[in-house]
Image (tube, rainbow, N blue to C red):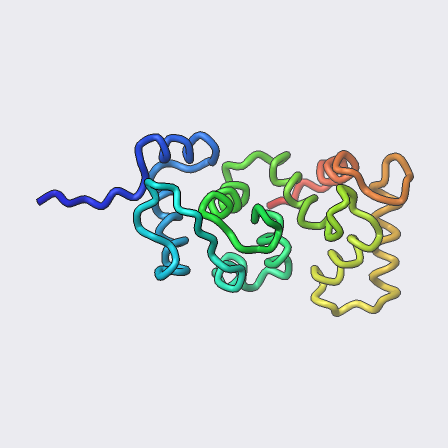
Length: 181
């Protein structure tokens, strides 16, 4: 009687609530989605903090990501090793940042990291080319992509060093309020 499965300890659930924008119910719903991606891999009991990672191939196939041209970058940025394979913590962080409750500056920070393909903490012309190519799904010519990248750098590069810092990027986003919707 009353054999209720304990997935998390009370302290674990409180910690997840403290570091995400989710309620306990939402955390449980996301846990079950994570578990459903790889039921043979993800245990139903997380009280002992198992060291489990769901492979990128399964993460990238989720409805929220499968049609997103940045799905691999998103998974790489949110995975602790940068390989796209996600722990439950990574998974909850990703969904937390994507939630409507996440503040705009946090969304901007992660968008910046996603567009920084070479991970040098700047968005350079090459990063912009990768971004524009993915956004347009490769439908523009090399010249058109270069022209767009040039315009973006001319417009947003506040210190004129040929690349966008996080501050440059955030200022650009302030001028384009629909960017992070």
